[in-house]
Length: 103
Length: 209
Image 1 (cartoon, helix red, strand yellow):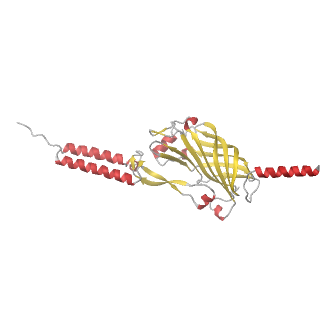
Image 2 (image 1 turned 135 degrees about the vertical axis):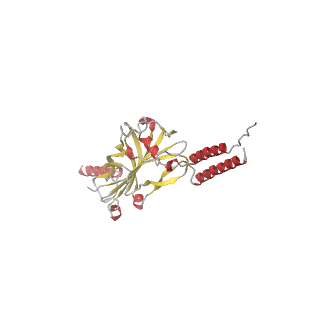
Image 3 (image 1 turned 30 degrees about the vertical axis):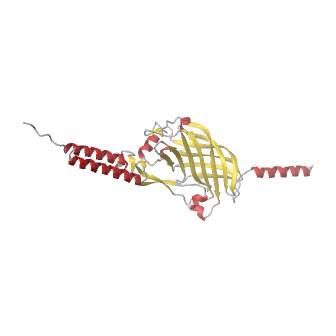
């Protein structure tokens, strides 16, 4: 592995580590969420002895994608790591040392 | 003889009033409460090895009728539309409603029909707890289940009118069902969902006509 290939490998590892760190800081959810359940119980609900919850639109970065129907569902640690690995592989291949032809 | 009969009648009435557990509110006699607004909800809680799943429906309809002074007279039915159940992940909602799972097309509703009420206990003048037994129908299969329920009665006031006109009845009930009892495959998007599902309802009905 030459110097440039090592740079690419290190950058790739750092990007994956940042994605993992960000995933952990967002609550370490297994699947990416585009909706989360929140408590909307009012004072009257409490008087009536009932709870009220609701799904609201909110993006939560997960470890795995939750679907393929929108870009937000695809964004996840695994998909970012996958893209980084593929791009790093392509660059490492392109930056390989070419063998000098012998006469 | 008349005195003996009178004493006997008083004892019967007194005993009946002790055992007839009901609400101590302004209303009396038979009342019917309709659950109609879109704030009513039913939740289906399950676990998988990877995460917990909460299915939530805001399309819960139905009605109950009972004598305010005796909750054991409670009769009624609550219906949940399967197509309205959301889990927070669109792809999972699709799987949940597919033929392999709850099969919305063939079985569009989940229902609970009350058969009997037992173990009525008073938590306050307007709050009772009870065990409500009924026929629970899901995926075309009907089984008898017993729910732990808490019922709260609120007389009409300026505050209750914000939700609906008339007196309000809040019902919170919980029970567990086994998916295999209802011929439901417990695999969902590659994850094995727990065999036991906790079903709970949080509904508010009004007796306004």
